[in-house]
Amino acid sequence: MLISMKSVLLVVVGFLLISPMVAAQEKQRLAVLNFATRDFVEEAEAIAEELRGAFVKSGKYTVIDRTQTEQILQEWETQQSGLTENQKAIKIGILLNVKLIVTGKLNKFASGGWQVSAVMLDAETGITLKSERVRHEGDFFTLLDQKVPGLAMILAGLKQTTPVPPSQQPATQAAISTEPSSNTWRDPVTGMVFVRVAGGSFEMGCHSGNEGECDGDEKPVRTVRLSPFWLGKHEVTQGQWKKVMGNNPSRFKKGDNYPVEQVSWDDVQTFIRKLNARSSVTFRLPSEAQWEFACRAGGKPLKYGTATGRLTRRTANYGTEECCKGDSSDGHLNTSPVGSYDANGLGLHDMTGNVWEWVQDKKTNYGIVGTDNPIYEGSGASRVNRGGGWRYSPQYLRCSIRFNYAPSSRTYRLGFRLLRTEN
Image (cartoon, rainbow, N blue to C red):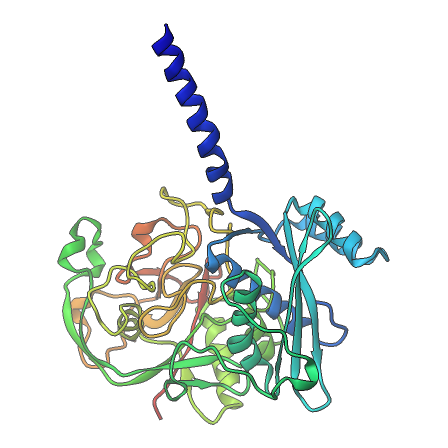
């Protein structure tokens, strides 16, 4: 009996020692609110979405997806209620059931520069835990792409900074970039960033290592040769669509930095014609071959188009293991802001997951398609889409998977990214 009691005591003591460790590993719930501004609402929303994506990628927090409409409306009413900032934080923290709140302001200067001021608040006490600001004497998209991710790293405690008085801040600060500037190009009309893909030869189709998952239309595997091209770093966003088309057809209207969806292949062609009319370069949809080559980070024998070539909740936005339902364990029940997950080997984001992407080709058997810069425009009615999406299980997210819809079809699962021709 004495030995038994010792065993019980050891178990109890072990539990007491381990429990705090387990609790310490639990992620804190965090909400990012839209940044205060009177004149730059779309830009402020883009800042908030960029921060949400960065906090998700940090792996330190459970970031609240603000698609819970009733709570968002309550939050908006609270923000208009005349409470102090600390009182607002506490009230909103209760509404959203979070421990931390990130909010701030966006300002534009007469010189054309921008400044983002951000704070992280304890939602239980309203106390400011961290505050930081970044300033950029240039266009907004550079601020968004190069400054805001670093701001999130500082707030998340992943990067240290020494506060500098505004009067002593340099006009430009060190940029955070994942690829050489000579390898990227930004469209001045929409702000879309394009990555240059060098081209080359690769084996297109479902490779032998994935035989158990190959669909019949992913074969025969064949050698395809491609010339260089430029491909969109991200899926086309709702904000970019609005700049060209003046409307937003998306079902999930969560912010300008989310992918546009519910656009047909025909709708995309209209978008391209209007954008080309305002541009000095030519845009179109990528071919199937170009898309798959880019997904495989330059034609490598990779199964998925993620940063690691593998699929986890940290590398892509996809559905439950059994198709077809969204999974919110990564903070996104449906679509996520573009760029929320690390880029693949070419610097391209969301080649796997988020939304399916239209490509140029009509659907046909690989056996009748050429091998040098192929685009199939022969007989057939449906157009191909690639990449899988937020509600699809892993077998539908492979680089070689092929879906197709009628060109007039619209669905909230389907968006696109653009290609810019080499010349």
